[in-house]
Length: 191
Image (cartoon, rainbow, N blue to C red; front, side, top):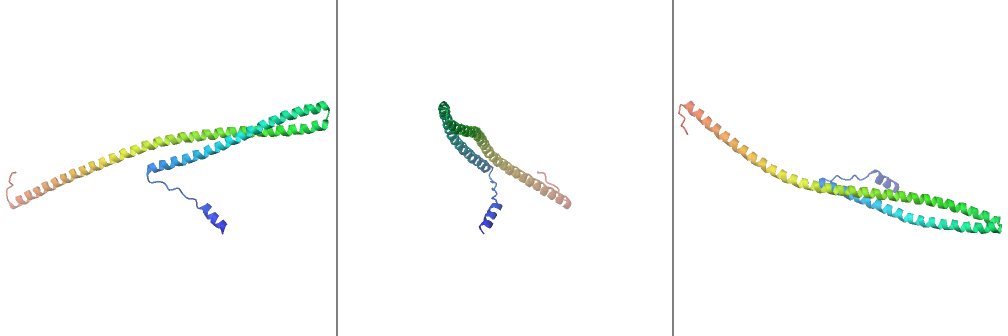
């Protein structure tokens, strides 16, 4: 029963509704990008913290290698081959740890740098979108004013057409009256 419910939840993804207001579409995209940039910065901060830990581990391994080298030199002076052999194993193991730590440190630095660049790119994109949104807002406002002015102009034009149509109707009525008078034999009076 639980698995059926989870399957239904997984197979019915919510489709983001497209906003009807064009400015709302800008706002939604900007908000999504800001959220994405925040997550990237958070990941980059985590990598920076890991990098600090790895740097401390690297320092410890380097100290351990120095300590092993000193102890190995003392064991070699004393001619103690068992201790020298154990110290050699410790040295190989510590160098392996140091190598792994340096690789992880290098990767963390590269990934952190990449994430910071990605966050900066998204930040630049957000700035561009905000500028474009402001421009679109201004264009919509001007477009609304122009539309209102055009509506008024169309209404005036329709009134002029209505007046012209009324004049034409009056002219037809006069013409019809003139024709009717002529048929009745009446003379047309000059205006």
